[in-house]
Length: 145
Image (tube, rainbow, N blue to C red; front, side):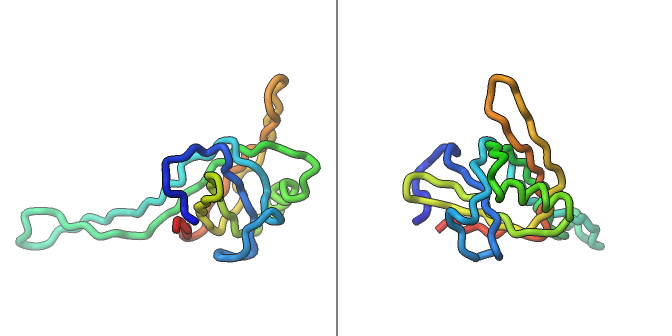
């Protein structure tokens, strides 16, 4: 069931899924997202001149899904989190899903991407976190229904 009301991001999760539209459950969960950057979808706009037209014309060019920056609550013994570091090391593309939870309602954004950066932040008096940048390869599929 889709999220029908305004909600907060306290229960946002990152999943590694087998494919877009594949099963997303507790076995695919990588971790809890404590901070998520902007999921920005953009397109190049191409301007051109047309003879006899007083205004410039525009066309939509290639689209770019950009890079998504995430901060995860780091759990060193979690094999799915170790998989993120392995994906960074080998440079292979993987299908990811960001899942927003609000009670029993959910919404997802699924995409293929590469781990562009992986780091661990260890503050003395706060939660240890893993900072992950995912370069999105292609489009983003939303399930908001």
